[in-house]
Image (cartoon, rainbow, N blue to C red; front, side):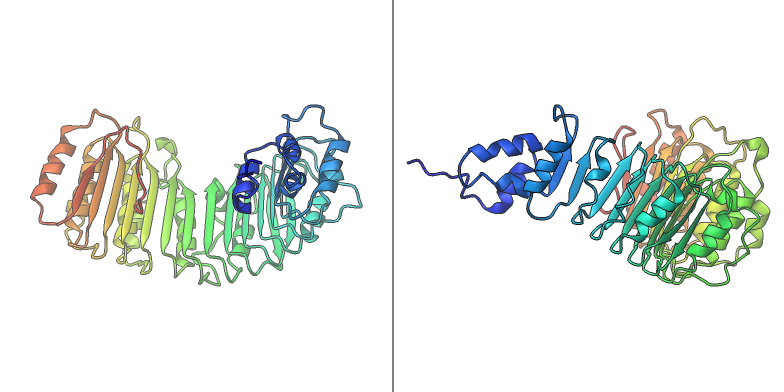
Length: 431
């Protein structure tokens, strides 16, 4: 008899085979041999989708009753049968999208659930709060564009990651002292941002905070100069901001002053009509003595290059003596920069960046303000600089940028200059 090589493969390899099969295909392997008769019943990923013809409750029930071992993922593309099966205590991840969540009263929660992800789901506040409360091991919650509720109380003692997108106006956290990563993306017109923000900074272990879209706009005029209790563990902060809007800058500064251990800062720049832009130059001049002593990484994405933005960027860089990595991305080529100014003339004190090692500037059009900015970096950087990466927005780059490259070669800074074609995707510093 010919040797059955497949049956003698390590279990990890056969499990990998099954990961490429649908449930229907996996069940058919039971006819291969006696050893394979029940192997399909140990699948950790159960996906019932539109590839299964005439899906019925009986089919799903048969698979579940025949199953042995843990179930890591249970996916059912059917609103009709959903809550007849999700009560399985072994499920550790639950996702729902574009549906109505209205479980029967017999379903109280998921004892083993660690991850909850719902998107564009209609559900009442009471149902969702009860569902979360009855998941004692829950570590991750993602709620996107929730329908049917505007306020939510979360009681999850083991929660470590929380992401909220869309229309929730207020989130109250109870027994969430282990929360370390929070991401909030508010829609325009939402209220109570300051109340939500103050609460997050009361969390003793929060390490990463991401504030997207119009969150700062909602919190304007409602935050003090500095929060009463600093967030000592916060080391990463990402903010969507209009850098030509003084009110949003002041709101962002409240967060920066309240995070003395901040090491990585990311700004996603939103644009404002020039006619409505608030001036930031006077504020920058009055706050030159600020210092972010622990800041190591700064990323600013989407700059248009107007003077108000560059004023704040100048302030931020000169206030970060420990800066090691800098990434700047210019976003809008259609913005006409009228307010040229010289970074060199305004900052005669060279050698400001004694620790800067890596610089990346993308989206360059080669206008005067951008060229002056790069000259400013070169003149203020110590021999610690290892690499400067430049990438133009298009092949039509002005002659000023090429003259700058010639200056760089004559400069004594022993750094590697990388000039990328516009069509080449940018790499991360760690690549």
